[in-house]
Image (cartoon, rainbow, N blue to C red; front, side, top):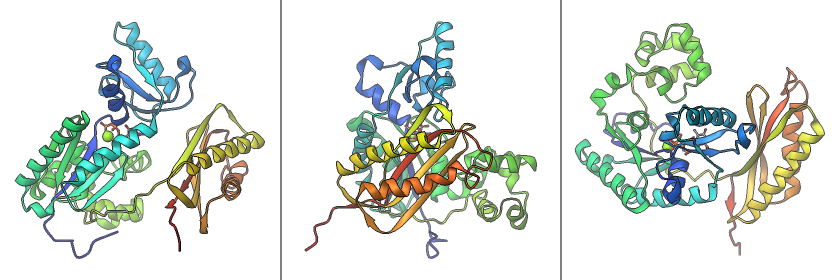
Length: 372
Ligand code: TTP
Ligand code: MG
């Protein structure tokens, strides 16, 4: 959504992101893990595990362990460290229920400081602090929020303050952990120019490769190209990038209807082509998701989404939104299977790759409302 009327208005936006969120909670709650390298994610199974790292604390990051790394690799890095006489990492499973609870507490603290807040993920939030009228005041509020989170939750976060969401987000990542970076509008372009292009939200490995081919490695390099040239290179996103490289972003902080979803995924012990097996696992996941749904405060779902990861880690998601709300397992299983079937033939799997992981998720959840 683009706010046209807000385009030229003076704004102060803050972005807050918790530090090593899942791992910090584990470290906080378990005296015996204090100061140790911690990895939260799939079971490493002594190096044979096939899932990935959700996150690692900063101590474990010193070993090269980070989000989305195969857990087997994380295990290798930890073993290597151990052989060098360093502390091996503590590997822990994901306790999402607890992290969501902490997330809710933190978001409630943050919401006291601004009327307009937007939760962007489990551990990040944007706040519109324009009402304060000055960056100096915004910085004081930023410090107060950090202190309150520290005092009440015993966790650290990093914050960025800027003239829009784009700058605020990049600034919060600038000094991690426990940082506070403020970038005024007049400083924004100089702040961005020396950064690697991956710092711009929306530039992933594929876009990076396209841009690298043109010798574009820093944000400043993007500015050497015209709007038309960037559009030729990257289509619609090219036009978007033209603005982002200049620190422009007029998207408002929107108190969105929280996109709640319930989902699960499973990495197979062995990559497979076996359609019957994969369908059976998908059904089992549907049943498990349905149980969580029944135990939740929600009464209906509208969207069913599946994820399939191939042996080379290529990952595809497909979703279907129903024409009306549903609340039954049959619909869930049927729609999930319908989305899955094209992955067994050339429609979604033209190279006939083996499947490594499948997942299912229900979205657009609605709370039970009593109707008269
Ligand atoms: P992030 O904010 O990206 O990471 P982080 O909070 O662990 O570390 P940082 O200090 O760099 O902000 O993600 C928040 C949480 O989301 C993270 O603790 C775990 C989860 N997560 C995953 O499960 N998988 C992922 O690939 C990523 C990036 C995050
Ligand atoms: Mg974080």
